Image (cartoon, rainbow over all chains, first blue to last red; front, side):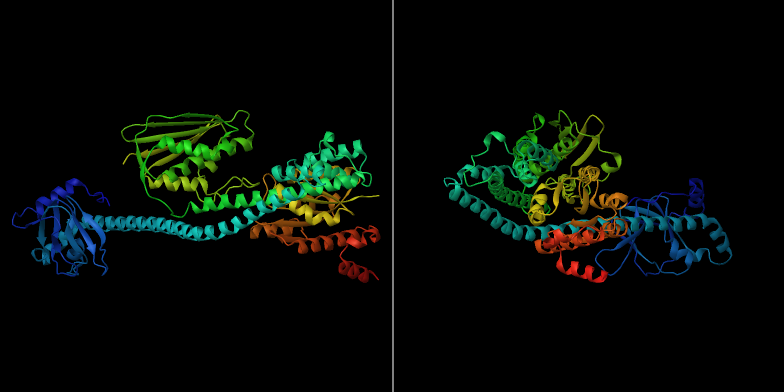
Length: 452
Length: 160
């Protein structure tokens, strides 16, 4: 905490010093950590600090003594006990540096000179009161900020512990769903591949591999076409549209089977394939969500010597499916070895690059680009990741690093609103800094990590 | 003859596919249409209405990109052409306030949470369709097998 600023006219201090504190015999020297007086000790002296720094501590009975004021050069000590006539100090006064103080005794001024003493020191008293007030206020604000931070990190830690347990349980459940779905698909494949159904069985594979490929709008459009062209019932036309039927591939109907029945069989196999496909997609999505939540828990945080550029390449491999739609440019600079957790670094890049790609794809940017540049100087390393996606509006920019904030709401790419809050937390843990600049041409995330 | 439509809206294709399996039992009597967004659904109801179709029931998710389900249902509710249309919110994520808005401003008849149980969903759909058909004064006889028998009975009883 800083020494409170003096608000007293220096001339007045000089006059007071000359008039009251000129007696060379009334000087006290303190070494650093020496006590000037103890709480509740009798005090009838008023001190002025000539050199050094003295602070007052309240003994609250706990281990931490609460500092309540400090006085530097030309500031006064003992004002409260001296003028209030309470006679005893209400705090421990300890020298924070080697200090020199001059003092006066109250008994020297009792009686006739008392009024004059008060008059001379009124400004000192008022200033003392106000500076203690300021000190108390600052201390309170500081404490409140610390409490808030503590509460926040506590919340994240609890969430992390819960997440780790939750993730374990749910991953097991998802593993069972995933494994058995694949098994069922294999059984269906074995059973029908070479059966008499094999002509329509290809629709099972189509559904299994692609899921429902066409949008509802496309399905409606094709349905109308098929209704007209093939003169079939509207429900058969819808089925053909859903399976994205190619007219050239219509299997031959047997004598005993109507066209509607044949379409029904094709659609039936397709639908079973889609159902298993969707189960697998949903369980994969579940695994992905769990992974994101799990990042909040402190699993493996050990730090070793790592190559920064390698961690970026690793992230790009993980994001293969996302970045393949994007023009990627990675300019790797010469970077000294860092002491870091590779997994954490990869996580930072994955979150930022993935967010950038998704925002460009969602916005339908015609030539989406991601540029990555790494560089280093004596102080640390700088990583710049920019995209040519839409500008992040100012009000959104303020919130992107907050947990629970997301702009992604729909579809399987929906976000938990955790990505960039994780990035922020990780960058913080390396004493690094992250900033974002966004305009209509590009959005750039700049991360600086000091070399420790 | 006027054709009755059931429309359901969800931005996730996997959810639409799942829902369509539950609604398959209605396909014989109704035209069942899927939409991936509120805007697509609005366009579709306009088109259907213009060609003389009736919208019996709309089932909508709430959290979707673009227009939310509740906002979409409020629009439908304020549109005189769809005064009789039954509205159901099917969602896994609606806040308390969303729900209040849905009830007060969109006059939704039913709220079902994801994940839903097939039986409960089908039952609710049957009840709403039964109410729609009888309120709209449509000849219910040919729909009888798919209607909710208890609801049908209660409404007919009250008319006697």
